[in-house]
Every structure is written in C-alpha cells, then in structure tokens.
Image 1: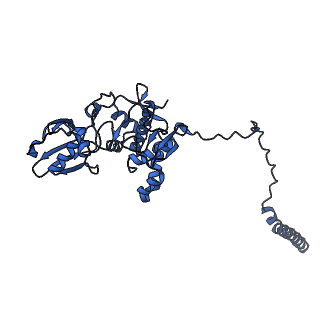
Image 2: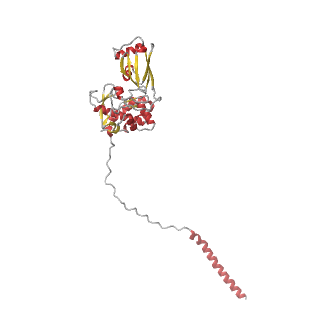
Image 3: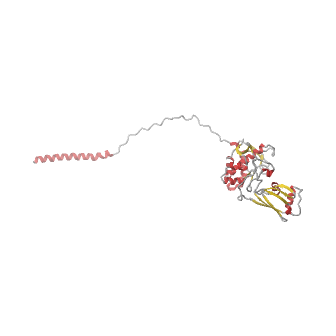
Length: 349
C-alpha cells in the first residue's frame, strides 16, 4: 500500500510540473498572440486612362466689344468755343450728368440716356449746319447741356464716385438704343416737370407731331421749385412786353391789360391777350421768364403776379415724371414708350 501511494504521488508531481510549464509558456506567449498584426501594404491603383486629348494650343484672347456707342464719334462745340471729338458714349455721359439729377432712379437715368442719344441722331439726320466744324454743342438752349467729368464731380461733392457710376451704368446699360417711330429716330424732346399732364407739340409750337401728344405725368409736390411766383411792377411789365411787341396798347388801368386767358384742364395757358396782342402761353412764358406755361396771372395798380407750376415747355418726356415712374417700378423702356406716344425702343441703325 505504501509503494502504491508513492507512485501516485510521483505521478501527481509530474503532472504538476507539466501544468506549470504550460502555464508559464502561456503567460509569455499570450501577449504576443494578442498584438495586432500589420497588414500587408496594398498596391496603389493606377490612374485612369485619359478619355480625351488636351488642346494643342491656348485659345485666342478676345478683346472686349466696344459697343455701338464706342464706335460712333462726334464733334462737340464746348461753351468755351473749342471743339472736341468724343465717342457717343463719352458725349452721352456728359449729357446725362448735366441734364438729369444723378440722385434719380437708375431706370430714369437710362431713359434720359436713350432720349439724349435719340435726340442727337435725330438732329444729325435732319442735316443743317448750325455749328460749322461741329455736330452738336453743349448749350441746353440750342442742343443739350454737357458737363465734363471734372465739372460733374465738383457739383456732386462727396457722392461723386457713386453718381459717376450711376451715370456710367445708365449709358452703358442702354448702349445703342434709341426711340424710333416708323423706323426712324424721333425728336426726343424732354423737360423738367409738369402739373399732371404733358403738352401736345401743336399746342406749344404749332406743329402736330404724332409721338408728341399729351399724356398723364405722375410728379407733384416732391419736385423742388414746383410752384414759383414771378412779380413785376406795372412799369416793368409794360417795358418788357413792349420789347416783344412795340405796337401793344396799354391803358391807364393795369387790371385791364391782360384779358382772354384760355387754359386747359391742367392749367396750361393756351392763349391770352396782353395790351391788345394775342399770344400763346408758351410765348408769354418766354417774354416774362416763367418756368412753364402753366400759370395764373393777376394785375393790379401795384403789381402783376404770375403763379407758375412746373418747369419747361411740357412736351415729350418729363424728367421728374420719369423718376416718379421709375420709383413705381417702371423700366426705362416703359417710361419712354409712355411719354413718346407710339414710339418704340429699338437698336440704332
């Protein structure tokens, strides 16, 4: 019995040694088994084959188009007597800057640019030789007003940059566009402001023009100087009118000097009689230096008083009316085709 127990003890002792060795090996090898294995590097895929060929040469550089205005030149007789050659675009910039407040809506300024371009082409098409050696002048009483960029900037003050850009946009944004009637440029006359309605050309100048007929105009009390007064002493009134017509007869009562005043429903004087002489409202406006022919007049022993509304002859496009329409969202084309009845905005020929 004793021998058997010894053998069992030896067997258990051997087993214990083997287990210990195995545990010791596992203790050292387990960390190695748990370490992450490095992946084998993957080959980089080849780039795809090109499906088109590259151009053999760079595309040519295209010069920007000069536009219609840039291709037209004219000779401007300036107020100092010199003549300068300008492109149409340069000339129109100076006209728009001079003729319309640059604070106006851009669509109104565009309408002014088209009207000015059209007026210039109409005068040129009519021929004549008003200005030997020049095509147009910078006098608004003859052709159209004109300012150089320096003159305009001086008047605009700290807004010169903004206003110069607006005028540039108005001219370039209407490049080569004109108002035409039956295919030809119109006599695109314009003026500052009126009282509710423009005038027929025939009522002002005695000539019927189909596209210069009376239309409603939306400007009003927002116009600076919309209402003005001109006052004369009886002696001043008498002397001024006798220069117009030396044959006029004036009695002793100034209250009887002016008779037969006929006005339309907007207040535009069509005819009146002064000192026995019949004249139009437009003639009276010129004689007495009134801002428009929309006036009332009253004479007493002490004074002759004119109360005037609006500014200008009242025919064609009203500038303040155009600005009011632009403020309502109308485009320059809608403005022009409203004021010039039956005319269309088209490219110049």
